[in-house]
Length: 103
Image 1: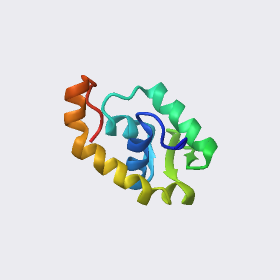
Image 2 (image 1 turned 90 degrees about the vertical axis):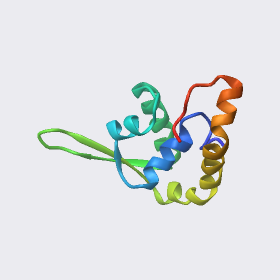
Image 3 (image 1 turned 180 degrees about the horizontal axis):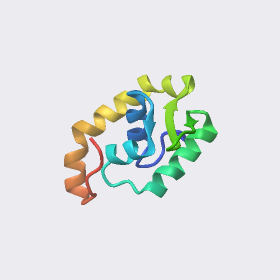
Image 4 (image 1 turned 120 degrees about the vertical axis):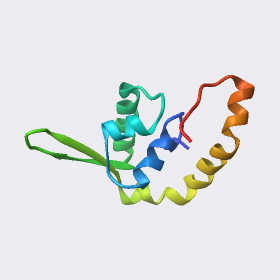
């Protein structure tokens, strides 16, 4: 549960299931996340060995994040939680007044 706790962990993992993502792609893929909040979550996921990053030096330095084999093994477990959130999230957000989170 430590790995998936918090508002943004499942959406981050879901986006990384599609392949390597740059920071900007992750921010655009999750409506409402602040860049510093994303960076904080990525540091924690890196420490746990769930994601890793690849840096490339060039005219424009690039950093891409992707799932490690351990992180990819979470896909089956987290997919059900993510699907449940998509199905029931709108009604729950209406009742509680929470802002929209990524679908």
